[in-house]
Length: 614
Image (tube, rainbow, N blue to C red):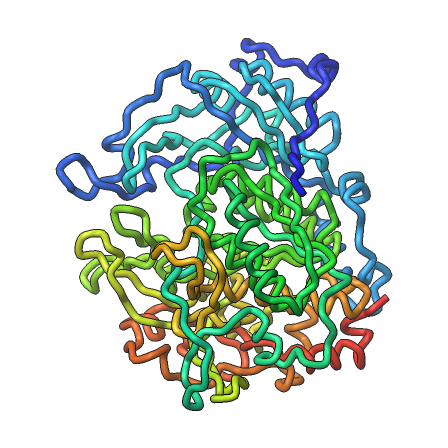
């Protein structure tokens, strides 16, 4: 099934309410949005290979060149919203698990129509056309020229070459007239130098799941994970609907999924729904491995679903993906949404997409939707890349390293899912796990090597949520720590899936990465939602309350030995604040460990004041 989800076109009558002329714009003071100057923050190479910032080599774009932008509007009544989200997860509160509909959220916390009209008028007066508004009024998109961007946001766009691509970025912070200061949050689409990347290890020759010595890492099929992680008594997620974020052409993904079902006759037959958010991009097949991994792991681990929905963006750029997240939230159909993508958190902060994404994820929590987001595959080096943009290329000990976490996993309004190396017995039963850290390997670009390891650590920007107390994450941490939960992610213990476009030409391949772990959590949480009336909602607060007092709810990561034979990456556990190779309890490398699904299900049933089922 295919659907195209376009934002509602703005009626022309809206423009007359608060029309701003070019002269009026010029007479107002400019104020900054949450979209910072991006150009000077990008480290790149000049034409002779010297390290420079992009502003040193960039040239101005032609004024008439066409560009599309998306304006993210601020939510209203922020203090009341924050209190509501807290009450939503507080037993005894009148708002406890009283989820809102999209219409109720828009009425209480979304931008008003008058605020929307003001932004639309500003864009129209600046020369933007084809202006569209998202159903919850938080995203306004339009097509314009580089000159229109300069008039609307008081910044120039400049072009340069970065990571082998011809890209652009804004020279200065995006600004708006003072009258829009408390309406506009950020402006997306002013740069495409930093984009999201799938968080998988790529496709490799499929590994057989035959008898192996106890404790050996071996690849598995999606249908084996329920038995490994204790989802034996709980039924399949037949009453749950799961969404997953994708981008580009989905033709091969759907073919792969059909092949997967034909080779797993015990699973119920289903045809996934594809919702194209914006225009369909049929030329982009670069994410095929990721979308195949997501869909097959979700469905096989869930044991079946009521429906599986791909919310499909037309690119991996910030604006397109934020719109896809928002489409899943405003549709309000899927109770669980998987995101196996990430980017350097500092880039997301500077572009304004972090603020825009948080706006979307807050609404998701208010509606009882859980986003599961991969924590990344580059350890604490998502921002350090080779010349082609591959992350995890940590600088030498004589250079300044950039320690970071991945966005959107760093949002306090999602479940961040990290990775481990999974060990099983000869009969395929769980037999322990270690932090996923394979050490370094060549990126294939010159002499560059990268780290393959679970993402984790502490955000540089997102405040610590109330449920991450000092007694759990350690004293002195005032920002969001991640991951929350971990599941299998190592290449050696990866997942065998069907991929028509696998990198090595085979149709059956093994894939690892935290983008295997995130859909695994999404599938298990869908089982729990399905078993409890789809009313569990965002579980972070409840999990952080329940697990420390009930350690049997998780399979902990107590094995300090790193994955395989690789040595621990120098400086990871000692230099990066808060990172520990493995620990009981919570750590900023392995979260609490992996959920023991039947134990969690029993706990939910026995503790309705922590996890209400009605």
